[in-house]
Image 1: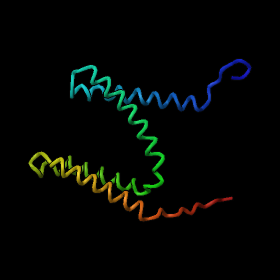
Image 2: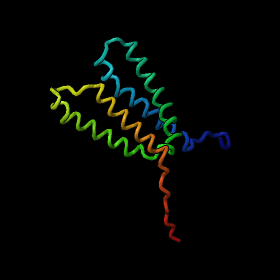
Image 3: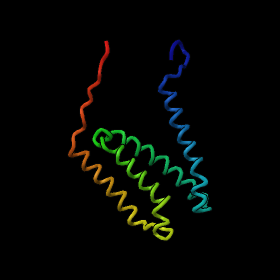
Image 4: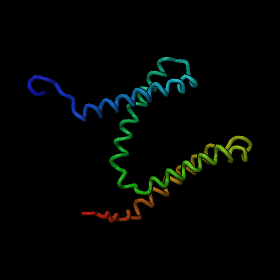
Length: 131
């Protein structure tokens, strides 16, 4: 407040953007949950818990991202695997690639990447400063 007038700060704009993205996520997921159930209570509570869980998961991941510097390569490998699974592996396995094998591959890629991030130090960046 200045001179009795309330002013908005950049933090207010950031808060509005975050809350708007939560609302968009909730609206976007309603058709997906209605594909599973027609019970309104389940739809409502699943959206509320998803929003609460995503926000806390984001802050948890943001605080440990410097520890897992190889995670971006790991996620690229997982996306490549999922793309191969949808386009080629499902048809190669009679229309259904085994879920247990798929989850095992994804968890294995995550485990290798996390272990490599712990054992291999991140490369030092040499930023060039031009005066």
